[in-house]
Amino acid sequence: MRASGKENTLCKTAQQFSRRPLSAEEMGKLRDIAKDARTVKNYVYRRYGGVKSIGKLYSGYTVQNEMTACGLREELGLPSAFYYSAMNDALADIRAQWTRVVSVIRDNARRNPGFCDGDRHYIRFVLKFESCYANIFNGMEPVIDDKLKDRLDALRSGADCKRLDGYMRRQARRHEKKLRAVNASGFSVTEKGYRYGDHGIYITTKERRKRIYVELTDTARYGGRLYILLDEERRMINIKAPVYVHIKNRGGRSGSVGLSLGVEHMLTTDAGNVYGAEYGAYHRRLVGYVKEKGGGNRREKENNPGSQKYSAGKRRLEEGLHNYVNREVNRLLREEKPGAVCLPKLPPNPA
Image (cartoon, rainbow, N blue to C red; front, side, top):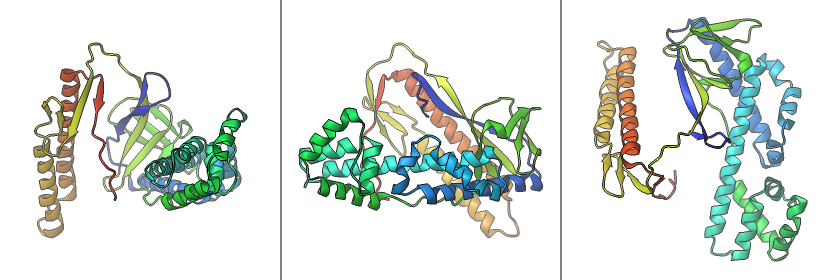
């Protein structure tokens, strides 16, 4: 769940499922789209994932125009509803990576004993502006809006800019990762590529004027960009759709509530109240089933219970666990009525 940019509005993910298995031919067509979408994403990662392309990530239609002119879409024969969706997914991944890199550089500079307060102030300031750190990462002078130029000049005059800029470049190279899409298990599609109707959804294919009809388990209709997740083993699909909802302003909220996350007991408040006391038992049942039945499927060739029966049993246990978690979280909100929830700040996982 994330903020949508509008006040008091959140974006949640709604899911839909196909009612019946698709034919092998239909699943093959969707698989081809997923593979082409993976190709597009890897192309965008290679071309725009480096420091030299940071300035293009936030410049409107620059990348879209270049991707239109490169000829990749014609080479793949991919409809625009899938091509530009894959491009936008890849660009979002690249932007997220640079946000992470900037955050790591800022935290490392704060903890660096060799920096004074003025050095840290300069680093924090230039890392706020994409035009500044993009140029610094590329070995150039930082540029900024005229309204802030005097402030930037004052900070640079009082700091060893050559040393600090070099530090930020080294940190960027060290923490930048080469992005690569490996799985072809799904793809995004804009509204041009699908249409709801007849208790299902019609999805565009690479064949002109040809759509695949998928009957769904519900009659809900969503708009915007959808993500189609493929389950090739069962020949089913899972649709993920963004839904924007208004935050309910419930009265009677109290102050802050501190929460501790546990393995046996899911949530424990600072007052000692426990929510999700059976979380460990639910989790053990799921793990025990996977170990027992999953191993049996591999070992018992003659008396194999079957992958569909195993998957159905596993899915029931997973749904039971998820439903229990949701019930206990709702119970916490209903009984504690927290105005804010505080979680302990644990050290990052080194893995």
